[in-house]
Image (cartoon, rainbow, N blue to C red):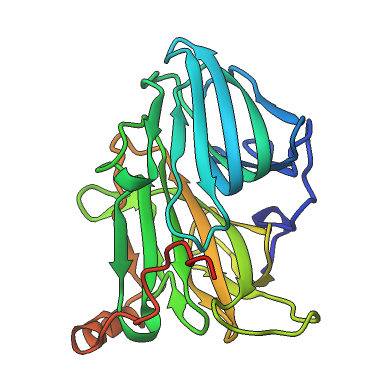
Length: 301
């Protein structure tokens, strides 16, 4: 069964100048949130001092964040990037109960998770973002782990972003993290914020319509059956169930930002593969990483 709660079409949940706001007001959603927005010079977006932790992620463009709260007070420039396909960006973690004012020009996302725990506000420059090339062959993708437990001292959430070249499969094999099994599986909600663009180095007509595919399906008696065509700005919510693949259509590169958090006492990403498909990981040992990776800023011609 499809559920309109689990798919947010770009621009369908605007609020206070933000393009979309997803939080606990979505029925059945409790542990994660996401804001997306766009700014031009002279504009601003504001974040209230709510009981949530946040990461400010430039998608395209550069920004300046002025912040104040018990987690720290200050100003931080975010150099950003030309597009999400230009490799990692610098990011800013804002501890719980921090208010902020964001100015600049471009598009940005803000990952969120409710928490009473206050961690210090932290700037992560792009050169310090761990870059992982995951999978192999047509399952090759590039992961920027700026908000994972090994990289960031956050309270609740796990945040990363993934670049998948045209024609490749990501979030594959399908997996789940919807049951707390200590040491084996985590119970985590997950947000996928998507972007898609004509593949790097490809000439396409003006009529080109970049898209990707997202899949979520039931892992137990909780019904869910989502198979969506996604475009830039669309948001897929995974409350539970097997999820994957996320597919970059031929001719179109795919990006997604992941935000995960849940009720477990430990901040860890433990997953269980769908047993019907987990065996494909064995194929990677005899395959090479896609030579198109890593994606970095394209040289100026």
